[in-house]
Image (cartoon, rainbow, N blue to C red; front, side, top):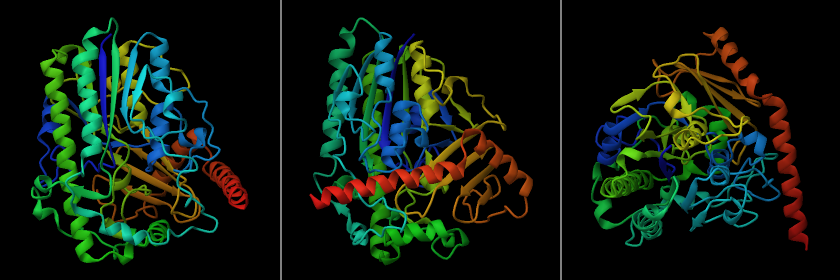
Length: 451
């Protein structure tokens, strides 16, 4: 048995880090963690949207099982036990700092202690309607959210400072093993930096290599998202500014990881404590003319995942696909605790370095696309199954930027991956179930507006 710490950022596209190959953005503390442990090269979120992804991580359940489809929390079932509660019931002290934004209020999640939970107020995001597709009026104004603001990181620094105080002052007094979870809001938009971080990467004010003219940008679901967020209205200056600000936000997060690693070393926790860095989803950053998340393209659905401590080999890189369920399972493995048998995922410590048969799954039922989409990644292959548009098949070894849909050339591979999908759920049945649930949410909103 041992302790565990997981640091979760918000909206970190892993390709914007030196560990995952960015040509000039340096993340020395991610590199430091990677040297001490294992990099999972192909990590995915359960759904590329805050509340669904986080809820799946907390509960060990798939998004369609939870019916937490979007960032609207109206009438979402809230009785799923959270990992903090299940660990606590087995004698593990569970401390949580920062954003929750899940299916239940922070105080109902059962952690031993929880601080600055930042739960979204009901009803949350009301722009979830997909029949007809809601357009987020005025969304293009978000494109001006970048530049210098000296208070840019105050909220995250408050959370991080409190968590480090807990590690220094409270953890040494505990008579049992513990889990510490820290959630920070960066590099989530808006892309505000302090002056020092804004000055770091002027070269990041570039333009996306692949824009709205690519075939992948013209897929109906991509077109839906561009319309929903009005991203075709972004100016070149805004695109450049947002990309530069994002690089500064990533550098800030990397520095907070460094503070955490310093505190672990200074407290003598290195040998007895697992440390994981990850995120809840990625960020498109203008690729294919798309911004933020909500897409099953790689930049949106991929996440960083680096783990060190008991059970993790130093300097190792794992190609086998993993997801946030596996991250959560690793906390139980480290604690020597029992995990509910019906929860998704396997401990990261047990994932082989290169298993071409292991499949991971993600799904999206939220705002901005007309209907559900599902992802299966297996080996070098990735299927995006769209219930109301053409399916997409990519070979990520030869086409990592997802420029060429090869489903017509490899129908047998598409069928193989679809079979993996149908082992998890019926995509058509779950799509209709999601639409029915969202129709009920819309009825409740309309009734509330009339009173």
